[in-house]
Length: 338
Ligand code: EPU
Image 1 (cartoon, rainbow, N blue to C red):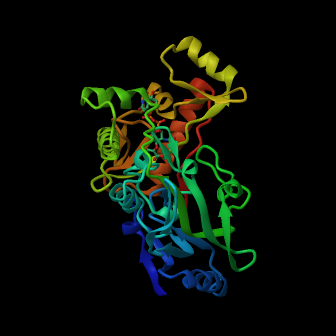
Image 2 (cartoon, rainbow, N blue to C red):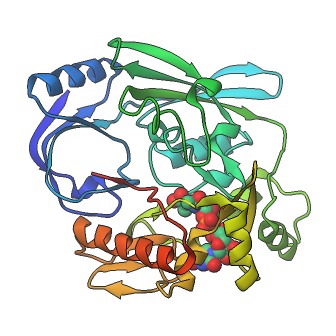
């Protein structure tokens, strides 16, 4: 396993923030994982697992053993009627998996195109966009269990997926290191176009029976108009989760703001749009030095160049405070602070 000492992580986080790691270890083989765990223990450094670095905010030096998951692999492992099981290594780029599904005419993850990051991170926050979540197509994963020092296979129920939530962020936080993920995709066309603006955009294009490529192209164009280009502007996508609140709180907001987007979350709860709340508080397009709020989607914080992790987390805290003062709603970061 390649071991780099005192290494800058700037190239390995999508915010593009400079921060040195005491150790950066590149895990390219499954066997590297156990070795990394042992080395971190020997060196008495906390172990941190890095995927694509697209959901972290580095706030300072990393006095840690950072293991970067680079285990490759991408193949069809089983066919069962129209169901096709695709297995990918944790280090496979998510978009590479999308392109693989496209070229094999497999439906299920087309709405998740252009989500930055690696396959191994996708179950942790149950990535989702445009009415589809990873859990809808998830079959199983293989992970190194730090409690038993062996590998385990976990199925969908084991992972306890919820909105941007899973066992890997809650009860089993820090326990598993995901090495491989299997998705159950389908040869049968099953477009998910519940978001009305997707349907409208398709009819504008004169498409009534969309092909897989039509859906992917549409989602890509929607994302490109709303979200910063990861090659040009540092960000971590949505910085906050959409808050899930008791219906009573949503009703109060609706009473004074009829246009507030509110979605039923079941069991007496509603999901509010964090981007809307932030925009209402006047933050959309705000910029202080190189830390800012994306002008086309207020849920996204950006680094225009030399912002530090501390500047971005200070901005996040100011936003949290103002949304709380104005609406009595506590925003929770989706991004992990390192
Ligand atoms: N809105 C505003 N102002 C804003 C942003 C949003 O008023 O600045 C309103 C929109 O008009 C809409 C509602 O808020 O009525 C929801 O907005 P949008 O459809 O853009 O989605 P989102 O809830 O802001 C979530 C995901 C995104 C995903 C989109 C599309 C979370 C935390 N984020 O954002 O995921 O792409 O839906 O489905 O759930 C990511 O996780 O990095 C990410 C980009």
